[in-house]
Image (cartoon, rainbow, N blue to C red; front, side):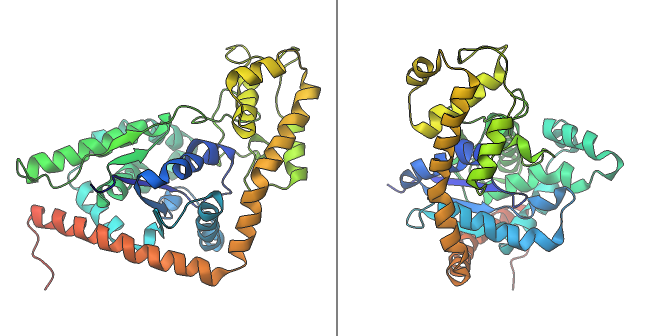
Length: 336
C-alpha cells in the first residue's frame, strides 16, 4: 500500500524563527518517514505583500537550505520552489473562475492584513487562498500540516475541491482529492517574546519579538534577557494572567525535551533571573546543529541547486498530471 502524501511550504520572507520550526518544520521531520512528502518554498505567496526583489532569490535559497538543515530527508521528501512549477499559477486561474468571491472576502487573515495595507492592498492578497488551494490540490495531498490559524484556508481548499468535483466530476471519478488537516497541538503555536498573547511572526516589525533559527548565541541571549515577563516569582503553566510565563515555559519544555510536569516541578520556585539563563542555554544548544548544517549547505550551492532541480522534476511530474486532469474535466482542448 502506497504512503499517503503530505504537502506544505514556507514563504521566503525573513528568517525562519522558532515558531516556524517548532510549529511546523520539526513536526514534518518527525513524521516524514510515514508519508510521501512535498515541501515547497512558496515564493509566489511572498509577493502578495510588498517585497524586496533584490533579496527574494537569496531568501528562497535560504529557506531551501534550512529545510535540509532542520532534517528534511530527501529519501522521504521532495523539496522544490513553487514558481519553478508553472502548474501552480495555471491551476490557480482555473480555480479562480470557479471560486465565489464571497468565499475569499470572509477570510480572516485577508481582513487583518488588508487593514494594515489600506488602499495598497492587492488582488493577490485577496486571492492567495486560491493559490494555496492550487498548491495542495496539484499534489493529490492526503494530509496538510496546518496550525490553527490556517485551518480556515484548508477548509476553503476542501470547499473548492468539492465544488470542482460536483460541477465537473463523475460520481466514482472525482477530479480532485479532498485533503485532511494534520494538526499537532504541542508546540503548534509559539508566541511572541514581546507579547505572549500574539503569535511569533516574521511580519512583526520588532526583531526582539522572535528568535530566528540563524541568530547568533549573543543575539539569542539578548532577546531572551529582554523578553517580556512579569514581577511574580514562581513560574507556572496555564495561568491566563501570565501568558508570557506560559509561553517561555513551553519553549523550555520543548527545546529541553522534558515533560510538562518535569518543567513545572523544576521551575515552580524560580524567578526570571534564574530561568532565563536556562532557556538561553537550551535554545543555543538546540539551534547549533541546524546552524552548522545550514552553513555547510550554503557553502555548496551546486548541491543545493541539484536538490532544487531534482525537486522541480518530481513536482512537475505530479502537478502536471493533476493539471491535465482538471483541464480535461473543464473541457479544454488538449495540447497538440
